[in-house]
Length: 541
Image (cartoon, rainbow, N blue to C red):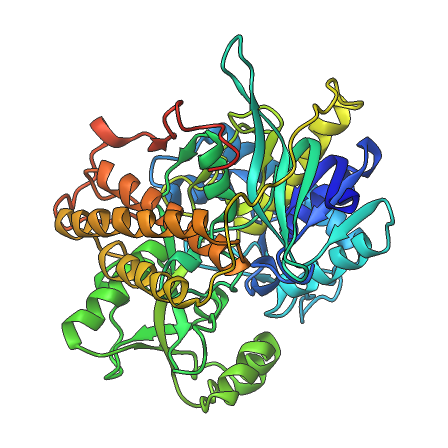
């Protein structure tokens, strides 16, 4: 069908902060098609509570922000990228303000912004919109995209595979778009584009417990890997230390900013413990805090620890954290009067599709921006509130790149539409549901906050078998959104397992019981994975 074949200059996959920002800035360079799994406003960016780190205060400095980022990254940050991102931050903040984003103002001086402090930061530098910063920014960006007819938005569309060609003379792969499932009609559409931009977010859904929305299945990383792109540092999965512990809360995130405003971590018996793990106590970086909580829970046998901010005035807590306060009350916890029970949960992928400082991947025609990308900013551990900043900066730089290259130098070749072959409708979905649950449980149990060679070996054996089952199911039956995501989390799980197995040390977010020390001599480098050439570039895999 003609309607199932769309040709555009730029195909943007993902509607978080990175994808929306790029789309708005690349309008002048050509036509834009933006595809998103669900509603355009549904993304991890929307749920970001803390804020955006940027040097805006006279007492702060770029050097301090750079130093905090490098220290948290534990030796694996690219210093030139860190410097570029930090120096770009004030300009990106001004653009958001001009777009209508309303950051919270200081109570003492209404002409200045209220700056929060979070784990790993030496100063207050986090701009926020109360405790729903992501929702405020997404709202403004979504409104801007919806009001511009030059951006064609395709909601409830999930990308299946990247479309690639291989040059016979040099065997180099090039990306020309993607096959995309329309979840409502069940048809797979062919999106052809000069440039494809992956802005699909992270992969925390590969774990049983996560603070992320259901969209974060690692789709971009899985598709890029299958196409032959380099993937870097997938072993560094950040576990947010403090998610609300309640059977019905779905790991509701308790912002880092609660600790920044004086929240103290305590055992379930009410005893502070972070002084035994880091000089910054409850303001320690996330990797150290998450491991400390995990250790204390294992020692005590408790299912949670406590986050106590009851020593702050009730009026201050309600004004600074209105959303968190309301959510906690909904589940029976008045955070102004009693400590909040919390547990760690998978939160942010520091690894991803390897890019340069403009978002270019190792495949021509394919860019990656936001959490899906590995830019070198975060290293082995992300500094709090640097994620939204990275998305803004790299969306800007990628848009600047494509605008400078306009008009596109190459014409799009004639490529085949999607073919279902001999696939038939599945009569039952039990395999998908069972394997989905098994992958997430094995990742939580064997490849979680603390790892070992024995646990990783078990995970490796099981993921191989699961991938065989899933791949056979993929070929036999007509695809659905659930099957696409299952296939992707299986691929990403395998990448995390193999990356963790290759790093024989403990650094940042990767902690091994067998190699508890850091080994700069052998492992102060990125972990790179790439599909063998004979398998890569096959758009039907």
